[in-house]
Length: 314
Image (tube, rainbow, N blue to C red; front, side):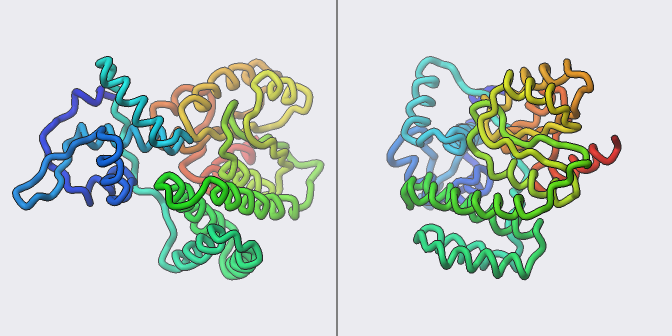
């Protein structure tokens, strides 16, 4: 990808268009402009903000850092330091629109969001129970739980909710998914899969959903959680001989760490299949070429479907 300073600087995009291109709400774009002074959009004759391709690339870089867990204040300071040194970051590729809730599930997402932000656990449990009775598991996970968690994360990034509220919501959803995962029977004689997260990766909801879908599919699944150590995982795989290892990474650092993990797994005999996915690989398709394995798609349902296909070929 080109460096950001190689992109056109001609103002041409309205704030509504930029919001769609970056995934950052217009109100947040205005706040970032006011507080951090990274991007200074031009003004049209009617005094509307106009952004260049270069502006959009800088905003997408900031959004990527914030989504990876860096507070916006620190992300802006880091970008300002790089630009001051003449070190322009590489432009990130544009994403396809995020798969979000359908009209049938949008209301459920909103109600669950309100209950979790209010820390109303009883109400949240009832909403999830009713949604689980009305929709299949894929729809519940991909079109209700995941969009709700994304909205909560974005509300935290915008400063609308506290970090404690975001943690409460994540812990609640993780607990619900674990209860579903543990409700499926253990199949001792089935092909075995390890599912977890790359080294230093703490965002585990997507990996947990893949583990849930694989166990539903009749495979023996060991869900190993967040922040797996490379040497330890390779040693465990040597002892237990899984047919598949599926790993998730939300940011670039953990995604790159998978390359070393994949190298260790390829030396095992028998060698397990390796599947990987997560937001880092959705955001930057070039990263998919690094680990020696199979990219598992852009959400948990796609990941589980591809993983099941890989396992059924054995």
